[in-house]
Image (cartoon, rainbow, N blue to C red):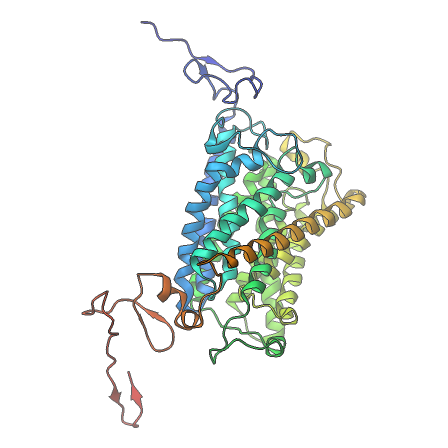
Length: 492
């Protein structure tokens, strides 16, 4: 029996008649695509994936030791659970071929009908590749938000909240901005790689979560009063600056792919975006650490990491729109704004110890505004496809763009904040899903409460690994040997 001839696809059928794009048994569905575009997007997808665990490492390093590993576990949860949710219905909610301006349908549920047809993002790549790339965004966004449970949020309710949040906040905003039928997309908002759905949404969601949880217990084990909080918020140094820096480095590394692949093809614009991303991170890091040195006369690893992240946040909406010679300035200005929000955050009396609201929420808004200032029409044209379809911002005397940027940022912030408050209120009323840990659990640490990997406390509220000769299930902590020194002091 003669084998059927494989015929290259020369023209894609209508999606409504053949959503897969053709028959792979008789047609070469690869033929219309450039292998360079496919390779670029696939490699960037793999590099982007590690941003989610990297955020877990960053947060774990910034936590006190007694709750650090819970953040690592949360990062693995976001990577796995958000990935499954995305496959089941998430991708369909924001990338389906619908015509309404609010939300998609379930026509692409479980990646049904997702294969070789050109994606909505760019006809240079197939649906299945863009779907693979998109999952890295939602898992990273959920992990950014997860830091708001900082040492006092219960683990299982937080997981329920994160999945509800991605459904009712992230996918709505992603549809509005990235689907050609979305109302913000048609409004004319410039948001290159997702400042609204990713940074502004997670930042204002974190503000809502921090408010609903209330402040952490103080050093005396009691909830501080409002007057105490306005004068001094609890501040603890990172338990592992090294782990914090490792997390930051991998986030920076992954962000080249996060922004660079948002062109959804390989072009001069992709290269331009990567250069912009690096310069903004450099400007943000240097600016923050210099500001901190001016106040404290010492350098700070925490400040360096915060500034780098702030620079990356600021350039996220701007990377594919602004000239390369202002990218460093975008990072620096975003870093300055985030720095002073952190410095005066006690005025809000909200315990956001990881500064998610300041760096991602405010930083994302600042990035949107700076995009309106510095957007130049020649930058998006570097993709070889856009041409003169973008008018630029104030750089090209398109003064209307600033109003669109402010409207888009305000919309994303308000939607995320109010929907987050509503979701948290409802979840907290469900029996067994109250969102705050007990005082005993908070004092002992979330790691000891939730992780089987830790068994005992060391007397300082820090979890300890299993000691030699002690059963994992023993209720008796390891004995401490007391030795008197020559000065009469006692040492362990």
